Length: 247
Image 1 (cartoon, rainbow, N blue to C red):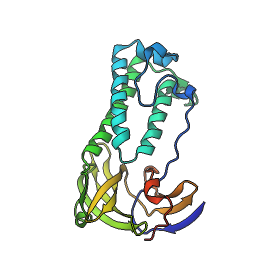
Image 2: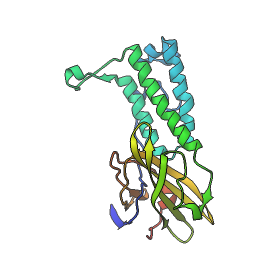
Image 3: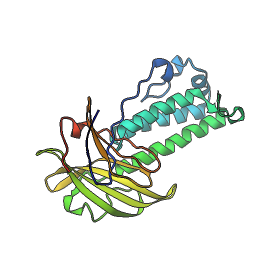
């Protein structure tokens, strides 16, 4: 891996490798589909299939997931999280009475809560996607927050990144609050098209964003930036492959 440059901007552009999942890890639960109870061969799957409430929640997850996958601002990260959620559903709850070293099966109420928490998270991703305009004027980049991720939102810093003569990105860091987390930060990435810019990536899981570093990999040139709460990821091969960005 060859480091190319350090851009002095607050941003988040990350490449997250596709997660490998074996058939045994996901069992008969397809990543984007509801359980097929005729094919259920895991105890948790049979538990869900035997409970009408759990079956309905499983179908709700299956209906929401394609919407999130198609429209979310960081689809690679969310695909990874969705695969992890499916694996955690089968693996059970960590048994803290055993020091958190083993897992135990969830009872019906715990499994219901496990699904409802995830449904709430997926609904929030849909809300964020629906709140993103199709495009906004380039001249508004530093003036107002784009999207609906934060309340009391302001733009402390924003800027541009030229990839080559044909492609230009814009970015916007947002400060604000959410009901769930209090003080929060957001990041929105745009592809510039003339005097307009189109949102192509966004994240709201940090409390601050720091300057990214760009790296050249076998898959293309990606950018990575840590957030205070989590190293978020957005796959940007479409924009970075074969390009050496210029600040």
